[in-house]
Each structure stands twice: as C-alpha cells, then as structure tokens.
Picture (cartoon, helix red, strand yellow):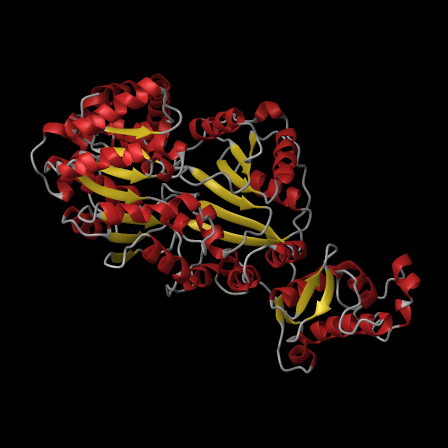
Length: 631
C-alpha cells in the first residue's frame, strides 16, 4: 500500500489529525504534547488507557516525516501490540512496519531496507532488538543523515523496579539518550505513582523532559467491589445479569485458577478461554486472536494478558483475586471501555486475598525497602476495597488528582450500611492474645482465622475442645456477630496492620499497633456485608449463546439499527479479507454514527469521526452502497 502521506505537503497537527486519522479535534493535552514533540522536545506522558497515547507520537511522526526528518522508532514490549498498531496504520495509509521474531529472514531484511531508505514513517521494535549492535548501527546511519525523527518509548513504567510490571531490558534504553542526544524522546505510560515516575525520569535520562499528566478519570467505567461469597457464582451472576454476550477479561492470580475458571464458565455456556504464560505459545496466540477478532469472548487470564490490547469494546474487567497494588488494578481495569462507552470494573475480594498478598510480600527475596513500599501500595489498595465512600475519589486521589463523588461506583449508587466494629475488633484481638497465653506463645496462639471465629462465636468444634479453648474467657463473646461480619473485622484488622499472618498456614498474631485498638484509642468502622442476591438458575442452554445480535453502542431507531447491522456485516468481510480485527477497520462507534447520520455523499462521510482520507478513499463508496441498500 502506498502511503497517502508520503508526498503530502507540510500540514498542521490539526490537519494531520483529521486527514490521516479522521478525528475532528484533539482531546485533553494531546495537541500540546504533539506540538512540543514536533518542535523537538522530550516528554513524559501519563495518560490513562484509552486516553489516546498513540496519537501523541503518531501525529508527530507523520509531521516530522513530512518535514524530511525521517522515521520514528517506537519501543514496544509486545508483539501483539506491534501487529495491531502497524495494521491500523496501514489501514490509514501510513507507512509503518515492525521488526520482531515473527518475521523470517527475508521479511526482516525487507523491513530494514525500507527503514534505511526513508520510506517508513514509524518502525515498532522491542527494546531487546533495538539495543542489538546491528539495530543501533542502523539508527546511527539514519541519525548521521538526519533521518531519525523521534523515539517513542511505550509502556515506560516497565523501566521501574518500583512499578508493577518491571522489565529488565528497558534499563538499557538510556543508551538512546547517550548515543542520539539530538533526537526527541517521548515516554508514555498509563500508570505511574511518584516513585515510578521518578524512576522513569532517572533511568531513561529524561531530566529535561516536560511532564504531561492527563486526568486519570475514566468516567465511563463503573467500579464495583464485593465481598467474596462463592466468587465463581458471583462472577457468573454478574456476567449473566449485566454482560450477556459481551467481550471481557477475568483476572485470576494463579494459572490453575485461570484454567479452572475458564472451564467452569465454558461449562455454563459462556465462550470463555484461558490465557497464562504456562500455555503453549501457539495456544496463547490462538486464544488472543479469537478474543481480538470475535464478539463476546471472555478471556480468563493471569496478568500475563492485557498489556497492549487495544480492543475498544471490552465491556468488563473482573478480578477474582486481589491485585498487588492500585497501579496494577488501574491498568487492568482500564482495558475496559476504551471506546468511551459504559463498562464495568468488578472485583470479588476476601480475607484470604489480604493474607496471600501480605505473605507474598513478606516471603519475597526483595530488600526491606522494596518490601516496605509494596506493603504501603497494598495498604492503599485495601483502603480502596474497604472504602464506604466514592471509589473513584479514592482511586484518583492515589494518583494525586482531586475529584468529587462520581455517582457511578457501587458506593455512590447504593451507599453501604456501616457499623461500629471497634468493640468487635477488641474482642478479636483479645482472643488472639488469650490463645497465646493458653499455649505459652505471648501475642500469638498459632491459630488461623476460622478457628478464631469459631471460638468468638462459641462453636464447640473438635479443634476447640481438643485445645481447651471453650474455657477461655473470650469463648462465645462474639456470638451476636455473624461469621461474615467476623471475616470482615479480621480482614480490616489485617489490612490495617493490627494483626499479622505468619507461616505456611497464615496463623494470626498481634502487631504492635494492636495495643491502640485494645485500649480503644483507634475506632474501627466497617461496612455491613451485602446480602447475597437470590440464587437464580445459572446454567443456560448453550444453543441460546449469541442467538440475539449485539445491540449498537448507542441507542438507534429500528431503521438505523438495520443499517448498523449491515455495516457490521460488511466490516466483517473486509476484516477477514485484510486479516485484521474488525475494530481496526472501523470502531462500532463509527459504524453507529454512520448508521444514525446516514451520509449520502463522500463529503458527508468524511465528517464521521474515524474516517480519514485513506479510509474514505478505500471504503467510502462501499459504505455509501451498504447504507443505501439497508435503507
């Protein structure tokens, strides 16, 4: 495909945005970032997933290429992302390519020739390839001829050892500054707290870079966190009630749980697939391709899946296990609703999650400073999970952004009832202390949460009577508190650090700060456990799956809906012919706008968001024909 932009005259950022990418206006700080980079400045950009980070380097790449300044090199950690980005740029008529392990020798040499000849506007490659002597020599050759326009370092948080996705190969990227000091560099990430931000600046030598921090708010995402109560069934109810037939991601902590959950959802009639690093590479690729190219696929995955997934119509992200920190949670949930339409971030969370995450930190081989920071990050996430007030306000506050209650999280939609759990907390702490007295272990009796709850509630189990714990003064003092409420109390005490978990069996012990609670100096106020919804029938006839067409992303009347379905059918044919995910041809939102507006001419069609010059030339007449045929 010949690049439309190759012989185009110089243009403004606004003209390139409209002519090449088909958008009428920049969002937020995009214009300012583009102008800064086009002028040759370095930048560090923090922008949420779905906020338009790619345009921040793609528009400057086009403009600088037009000005004779050569190729933009994009550092990308994932093969899937490279393929999608290059496919999307090819559809726009922008000369782009990637160099990675999927290419054979002849294909790689052809890309290298295109790179050195100056034909390419953007080249995508992984950091480990960029840092090879062969690649650096090609960059040196381009730079000597003034044909190296900029470096874009995507997923820049990967350089930070404090971050949630550290990748050692990113550390070598400081060489780009050392060897090509005159080439502007743009580092981009969706998540970085102050520690990670400082690490990015130091390790990538971006001390002189301008910092751009966009709002972290994703108002289209509704945040919901529920107490675990048969979590797989809770997940299934959530999917049945709110996301029948939708594409989404379910995150689990372990590979075993991924496979079990995917198999269980499949048995319940959902189109669910597993994804984790232990699967064969061909299986992972096949499952990812199905998720990207088909409607209604649910990917059950570890965090090995997700980075660089540009699928815009992911309608939900669910967590069956607690993430490690807010950065990870934010990055993962941000994969929902990239098209700006309504989406859900749903998580089930329980006492075992707190215990497991703390144990993983404590048992890691990291230094104490790193462990201390990871505990603080976990505490911030636990505070979000236990919150009685607006989830979004707390989430944004973590990233230093002030906000008002959103009206679009579970706590805003239905304010949780709370109760004063201070006295209950003191009873629990006293009981742990009594265990230690009885067994000769001061401050710890080497018992787990369920045994503690049994003693507090006065249950004469075999273990209680064998240990003689029915004779403790704390036996039965919490009989008026439900088991679910006791789990909540213990979860909060562990989350706040008043109770520690020890050893392989996560037995409970008092922390130093427990004294303040025991003396009544610290109040403990908790949410009342939500009543489980009525258990309806969960299994459904597999024959009903996908029987009804997926509705348009925005309300349309009957005639417009018919046009939307006709456009989707046409898009599916084009996507198959070009071997691309359908959304790269056009997003659902663009098709819906076409169906609603029913443009009758090419000029009218050019006014639809997402229809640039190349797509208008390639598809315009066919789209008008489809619209006319559908009435």
